[in-house]
Image (tube, rainbow, N blue to C red):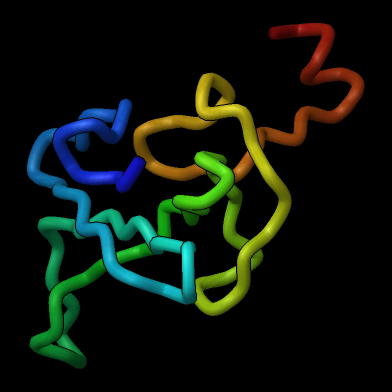
Length: 95
């Protein structure tokens, strides 16, 4: 299965949009574009959402924009990022 915007399970927040780009063989990068602009550049603002391995049909959190991190369950991801939420002991109790 190839990942497309149509079958990506998240919906972008208002004013944002996703872009899927080839990253490496069998790996796609998923970018979240922001409506904001910065004064120092005319380039669009985007952050890496995460990665998708087309061969394994698996999502990965990013270590950074150039490095694939650990596998994640898509149900544990959010619209803004595939990075897992690391709650400390106290926050885990309160949530």
